[in-house]
Length: 404
Ligand SMILES: [Fe+2]
Image (cartoon, rainbow, N blue to C red; front, top):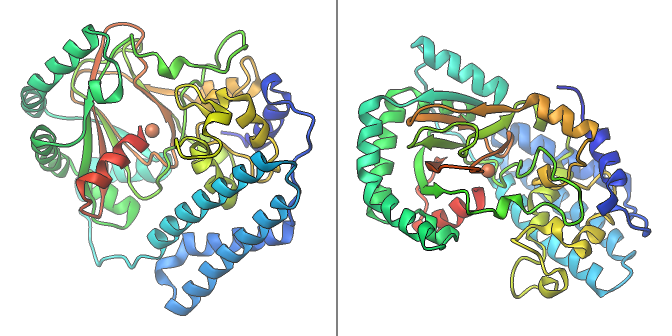
C-alpha cells in the first residue's frame, strides 16, 4: 500500500468538520527528532541495551516530551486548551512508560516449533501482514458453544428487553470465561498459534483474557458518525488498539457473513500511515481526553457515545496539534467520505467471513481493523487477548474493554 501520510494530513485540513481558524501549535523540530530517535532505539533494540544506556534513552524520551509539551503550553489560548495538553501529557507519560518497559524487558530463552508447514506459513504471514486466519476443529467449536450457551441466552434475553450496554451483552470474568480460556489455550497450542506468536513477538504467550460477546443490530453506537456529514465514511469504526504488547484473536462462535458482524482488517495500512513514534503515542491516547467524569473537559466536550470526534470542541483542540503530532488511532471515523484516503483504505480491506470456529490472530496495535458491526442477524464471538503475563482479572477486564 502506498504512503497515506500526506492524505491523512490534507484529509483533516479538507474535512469540513475539522476546519478551524486557529493555527496549529508550533514545536521545536530538533527536540521532536531527539524524542523519536531515542524511542526508536528502545523500540528496536531496548532488550539488548545495558541498564545505563536504556536509562539514558528513557530519560531523553521523557525530557524531550516535557519540552515539546511546554512549547505547546506557552501557545495556549485559554484554560480549556491547557487542560487538553495537561491530560494529553499525562496519558502520553503513562503509555510511554508502559511501552518502553515492554521493549526493554529481557526476553526469555525460547524456541518455537515451526516444523509443521502451517506453522511456518502462519509465522511468515504474521510477520509480513500482522495477521492470519484459521479455523478451530468442529469438536472444539461444539465444546465452546456448549460452555457459552447459557450465558449467550442471557445476552439474547437482555437484547430482546432493549438492554444493549457492553455489560448486558458481554462477559469477561467468571467461571464460563475461565473454561473457555482453558479450551482456547489447548486448541491454539495444538494449531501452532503459540509458536507463530512466539516467533512474531519473541515471547512466550498464552491466552490470558477474553470476552464472550453477543452483537446485535440494535446496538448502533459504532454508527455514530460525525454529525452533519451526508454519509459516514466506509472506514467507520476502523482503528488501532492501544496496546502494542498483547496480540489478539477474534473467534466466531456463530456463522458470520458480511452483514452480521464480520471482522475486517486493512493489511499494511498502519505501515502506510508512516507515523512517527510521538505521533503514534498521541494517537493511541488522545481519545481519553475528557472521557473521565472527573476531567475538567468532560462536560465541556459532552462527547456522544465516547466518540471524541463527535465533539466540535474536541476537534478544535485536536487540530491545534501540529501536523507532525496529529493522529487519532480511531481515525476510521475521521476519514472524509468520498476522499482518496477512503478509497485507498477501502481497497485494502479484507473481511473475515466463515462458519463458527473461524478466527483471526492479529497484532491489533499495528493492524488497522474493525468488527462486530451487525446490520441484521446476530454474532456470537470471543475477543481474545494473548500476553506473557498472568494479569489480575481486574486489569484484564479493563484491557478487554479497552481493546474492543
Ligand atoms: Fe480493536
